[in-house]
Amino acid sequence: MTILDRKTPIPLYYQLIEMIRKQVETSVLSPGVTIPSERELSEKYHISRPTVRQAIQELVHEGLLYRERGKGTFVSKPKINYGFIQQFSTFYDDMLQKGFEMKTTVLGIEVKEDLPAIASVLKMAEGEKIICINRVRYIEEEPIVKVSNFIPFVLCPGLIHENLTDRSLYHLLSEKYHLQAFRAEITLEAVIADKIDSQILDVSEGAPIIFMKNITYTTENIIMDYFQSRFRADKGKIKVEVFSPGLSDFSYPITKKSTD
Image (cartoon, rainbow, N blue to C red; front, top):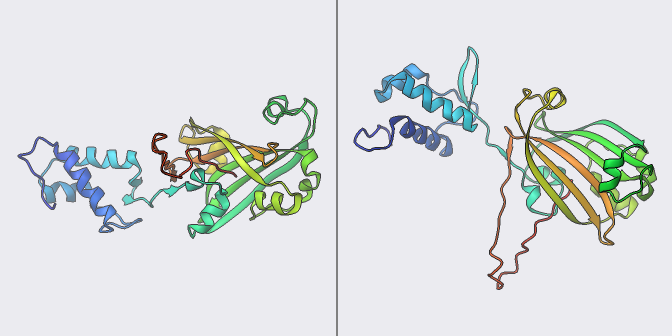
């Protein structure tokens, strides 16, 4: 569609939205490319600039476009599919398999004994030692997720001395400490970025954040890890597949598992 249909009841701004969206989806407009200005679009499609502005604003809000002051409006990069939530894999491995360049910064690793709320989640007695690990995962040099792991010290006391930069924590736990992740309980919440998120993830305070809590169990049903992840919602999305429990002929699992 190269012209707007004034005979249809579909609003002109919405027609323009769908036109631009199709151009992005078919790579007529590629990520990073500047789209025509409001004036150019107004003249090309013979519509008012407020109508054009409304369409552009909705696409910016949707995340398909982004603005840079004094430079113009650009096509956004496609959002990363946080697909590891759908399968028993790690975020690190899943992103590597998708071909992304990964980097990890370890903010800190220490042992604490004064975390009663965390101890309760881990089914531990108050005062027991817990290994606390804080990391930031980067994709293509951009901070994407902050991860805080809480692991019972008794399961892997040597972990405190390991170098966790640019490696999979769960691979290490499996290969060196014989802690094999078997199942996980996941909770997802929509929250807003606080001051720390803003500083670490390079987002504005109040920006949308995907907050995930994950409790991972071993094959012996022992909790080996509890972690909290705060993902940038502007850079990624979550896709979930569901199946009807009544279709018993299918062998797909109804419960999805995931690990850090």
